[in-house]
Length: 339
Image (cartoon, rainbow, N blue to C red):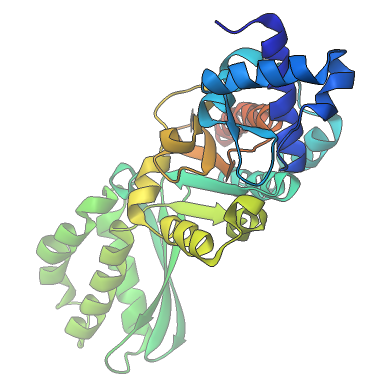
């Protein structure tokens, strides 16, 4: 059983370690708690025996354990409102009526990443949950073009398409028109089969070099369907943390950021802001991920902040709660304006 003074002591050690990244010794705590060094050491030893503190080999001080951070988040952390300065920076995004919802989410997470020095992530739903809304094509020359795919959720993907031989721009325009007529409203994961069985038999009647054009568009659209809508901001931020100081640590965390398996573990299914510490994150034992799900106007996804276990928990949680609320409010406003 943890006593009231020990709770306050654990809280102080967590906050001090978050701020300094240095083990906390008994001397620095005596004045605050008006106790002898021996009393503080005894309490620290008790917290260590309970699994809430750890002793490092480089100092006589203690640092919070994974269980210590969890106890702090669940029992000791004080709810706070987002600071005025943080709120002001985020408000500039949501007050900008020119920004689409996806752009507002992206820019607000860039701001949070910059403010906190942590890594932010936006994870959209699987492509199977999206429907094709429009295909646009920008010719670069007779053998190269950019295909722009737009979904009903507002996701936009650009693909550079290389043609095996020169094709007149009017034939590209005919193909684009046909794709828009026949593919609008098709779930993204069904696009390849519809191209193969519905469009290919027709396209040969439209243009001369139909195989070249068809193959190029098939490859571009098929590649899009296999990708997850995910965006990291501030990947390098986590490398600035002292927890990732060795070359092996850096290589390890970077490889995880590039892993498709990790991306799937970021997704959140609950509506509340949740905190996953160390092993709970299923990403890396040295990180914490704070994340939540947003759902509005038919759009759904996960927003997350990844940092060290020595994270400013209250600040990150408050900012994500604020962000989630404003994402959903903006989505509703945009929906009303469209009506």
